[in-house]
Length: 246
Image 1: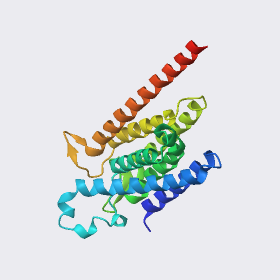
Image 2: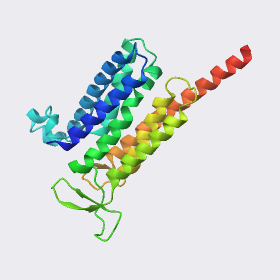
Image 3: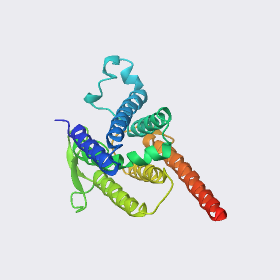
Image 4: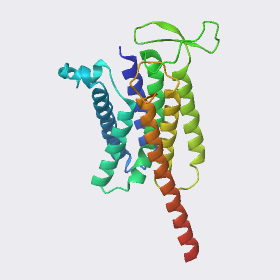
């Protein structure tokens, strides 16, 4: 049994249920369908980026490039594929992008948390080995199947995401322009992923001393930060216009 796939599948199902639960009855089914398409885009993006970053292997094993069930996904590719899919759907269906991203934002908390927990049992994104006497270490396997006491990177990342999204739910009880919740979600995910990428000990491609996913997380962080700043400025202009009109 592929524990990681099972965990991500359960997280996706829970996320889609949240999308349906929080949507108006008339749009619940449509939002779930769009959520499924965005998940497909995320899967394609994650596999494409993984294949491209391991092109030396797949050039001689072309038949395995599409066999994602054998393992090999990239979370930066998943974020890019999901984001691009939602944006394209918003344009083609003439839906304000900020509103659609907000409508689908309940999908992301259970999905990202489940992915980290799945990594805990699937020997990915593990932390460095710690002394056996370290009470805070947690036994987890590496890609060779060796189970040792390691820094609890996966567990701490899951908890960080959980607490961040709980804070975000409380924060977003106030009225904001469409897109605010989605941009804050992306900002939190990219920031947390970037921070915990520095604590990972699994093999990775390195560029200028940092893992590629660390660079990707910084790029996503800047993108969502820019979107958030524009959203805040737009809300201020709207509020100013209303005050002047009154």
